[in-house]
Image 1 (cartoon, helix red, strand yellow):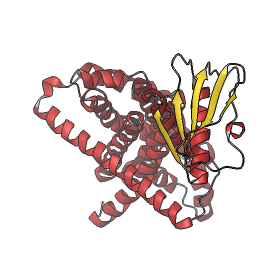
Image 2 (cartoon, rainbow, N blue to C red):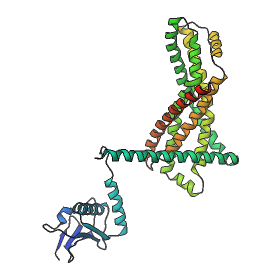
Image 3 (cartoon, one colour):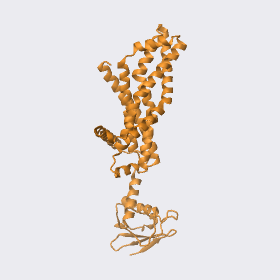
Image 4 (cartoon, rainbow, N blue to C red):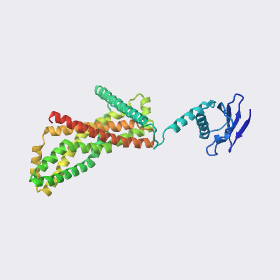
Length: 378
């Protein structure tokens, strides 16, 4: 058999032909990414096709990822030539790391498209089904946990729940109040332009009151909390997952859904109706200001007309929506936080997807409520 060697700055690849027609490559020396590594193209024998390539690591060899990259080059060349690549002479650690590196290199890069459109559609469908299954599983875990805590109320973490109620309720009053007041002002101004054409100025109170109580109060509050509280939930839980705090809870026998999710869901479910009532009042007050300044309608007349247009069923529908929206925002934030990747980028993606998912659920369930309430005559 014949021998050859390539040795750039200490990383040596000794190549020789074995009697059985295999090309044996012995890796020796010091393999460092800062010192360069042999090129596999220079280690091949010209004019002769081997039966396969056999890799081995000499004793005392010091290596890092440079050795892994060289082994991957050999594997890729063998795969392209249709040859066998024997790695039994390499340590287990090298083989395992090489497999991981090969899987990473095989992943499609951003912007790459598969040549088969049906394959892309199938993979996308599988991904959607997998994500849907995780959502159903998470909701089921929350339901089972809620039932268990109802039977064992002494295990509920009221201190954590009260803290979350303060953060998502009391601390959200300024932004909810500002947005609701401006929403009432805008609706009253737009309604006044239309109503004045028909001499029905007083009905501005009816329009603003009904829209705020039945729809906009709960909707605007939920949208604000989806961007404020839902993203905060996802970022907090995602950071805890990245720091392995959630793994520590599981190791101690504590279910993360009981410890982290349920207190947040209860806090949002309780505070959302109160915030919606607060938003309704400020929205009606904003309409009252516009009616007084633009239509010369006294506040007393505006308030009497609002009371005549709104009944208890209107308030109840808005509160039902608000409580449901609060649970949806909490589910979206906690789900994305618990499923976040263990990195800073993963936490950011989790917060973004929590907001998007929360807004989508709010719109979908609002449409469902509209149909259901119409069928029930509410």
